[in-house]
Length: 343
Image (cartoon, rainbow, N blue to C red):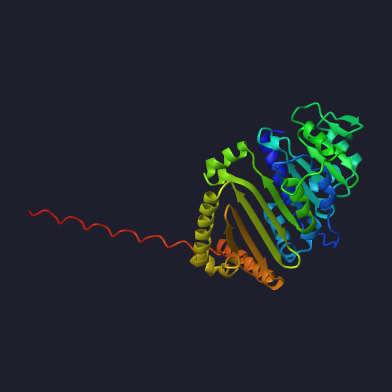
């Protein structure tokens, strides 16, 4: 799986979390999926799909998002090949990025929760790959392909664990788990999995900071970033960024503050009615740490969705009702003929 394929696959799986055709009250079990997170990963992303399906934001906008992105055909193809209907069966999604992800972007681990038809999925894979079954006392049963870039996967109850790297898959399946303190990504992700609908918990290493520094020198000083989102019953977004020192935190705080001020006074944003929601964003700094918080009540979320729908309608009307082209310019008057020559 070359890096563009991996990126498309991860984006695709993240998008799978948006379908709203099923409105079950059951919740996904992200806490259970956390048992596949080993060591001290670079980052963990989790989505409780069932909880998101029942939010006002997704109930009203999810179907339209699917239609705009033309994902129904892809979902149908997945269902026909594997028997897994993403729109009804996907309950939660967890993606783990080990430290070696900065060197090997096949080392991610994807944990999918849902009623997976193991036999049909394996039969589908055998049409493209030559699968080999392996089993060890420490890791249990799992399947690999002889291709270095081919998928590796295992089934554990209601979870399917997938990776592009056998070593990363084996680490996820390792049955023993050492205890970790509260500063680690794994501990923070487990905490977020207990009360958030979606989260991204991450740290950095020298290689990642070097890459971030190319985008902005201040980002090259980022140590940790925790983002948590809850849509029950309103909306709560919390972002915490920890930097190496006070100065980069101060610089980023200034950049974000200026951006929020400009957005609040922007004529375009105000014309679409989003200014009052931007003013709800709270930004504060405590020495080397930035905090960004946004809280909306259920009524405010409904107002936000109304505004988004109205904006979409305006844009569609602007596309479908373009003003007629201006009439062609009148022909230039003919130049007067030269007077006849004198006899």
